[in-house]
Length: 248
Image (tube, rainbow, N blue to C red; front, side, top):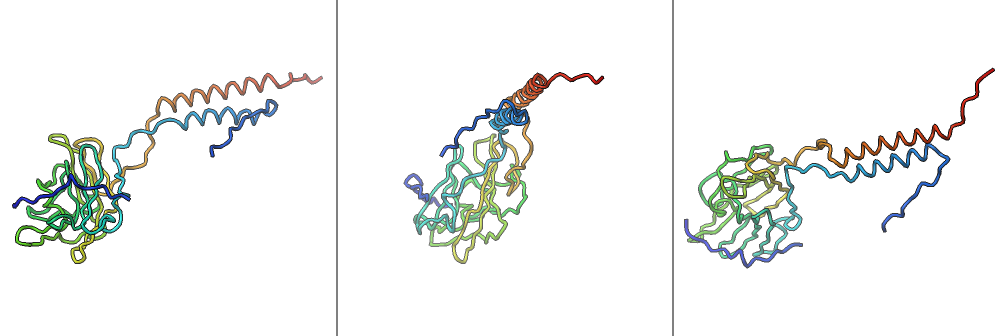
């Protein structure tokens, strides 16, 4: 493959009353006092940290819109852990359209220019895929020597690209939902995410399920404090009640 020069280092990133405190002051209203105790324990539970998510969504707002929202000839990037995802719109002497990875590689369907693999929603992205050794194999369009324009087949709705970053034998896998039309040289990034755990597969389009996290130390403490508060409220309520009078 002929050597093509890309000056990525010269790219610019073309991005685009506190509430008043309330205090419970009623000592004669046991219902209100109970609410105060429980509110305190619920407030403590609210600060419990959630469990770390395994799937990390990528913020694409700086490159949203057709062709990344870039001017003709423009480029931008998104930083990933030890990697960069560049977005190019008719960039450089080779007129590149598409995504270029620095420290990351995309899955390809054919050992040729502009052949990113088109994955369907739910496809498994892991070491079983073939990842290109050069980003020029997985851009959407690139002009090579002799003014030959290499163009990828279209990516319609529900199309995904798989990628990995890291270094062997430890790789993180991810996906990018994207569309591409070769007739208009128009692409658009719709969403992206990666698996934070190395060497763990991810499904195209998966952003992680909503599940109940394991109880954290703070939430367990909240339950203890809440139970103690309830017992204290009951004891104070009994102390305020008059002694029962025997019937004669």
